Image (cartoon, rainbow, N blue to C red; front, side):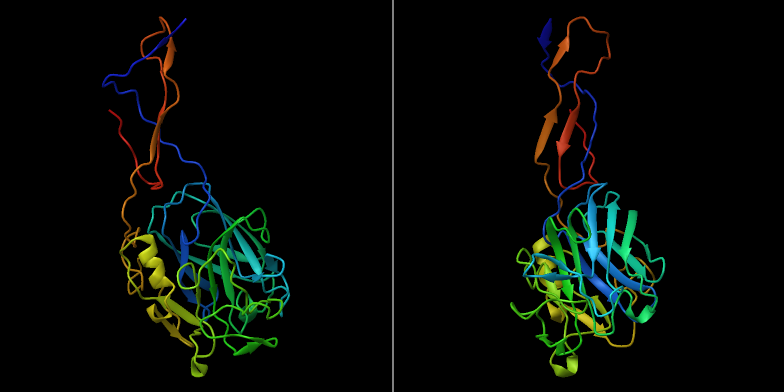
Length: 308
């Protein structure tokens, strides 16, 4: 026989669980790059909480508008690559620096969690992972290094006015119909928006552009996701240098991203749901028997909860 159990101010216990998640455009953004160092450096910020065991990919393949996936054509065929990152839990506003070195055994460091690497096996350090003419980067989720489920962020900063006969308009990705992308340029996926979830710091500054071998975001660190993204996507909120690398290590002395993580401050999200796994219990069970498990739904993965 089963009886309904009514809960009147009884504390049953608390278990909080989060599953790996599907990310939205702008949940992660690139905020710093250094080409003039070996290994190459990139700093990212997650503008939403990231649940543990979320799988994220970071690549410098170019997006091909014709096929709707990444083009693998490369001037230096082994200079392109992709990271598969299975995360730990990260609070919204956390800044993370990763490094990438090419060669016979490419190495990626700095990403909290587990990482596997595909490509970047070019032994010439100046071409791997970044070719001399600049590069493009994508953060996305998918089933393989070239299979895309959802885009999160896009970046490009080609130096030349043209590359392989394709015009590189300042502050833009490839113009539709220009031709196949390669390891210096890319089209913008239609699910991303230039100026918020994508940025183009491209073309030689002496030719009206915004390219830098080294680049760092200098905008606001406090605001909503959309407010911060509008600044990250604004070329005027970046400082660039053709010769001098920036200190983009979060929390380091003299860093462009000082403080203790989470370095960016975003408003806390209100929990959206509460669940009880069971509301019935066998009659005459022993005292202390678990009736059910309470859980909460909240995008702020680092939050804990108390139920009364």
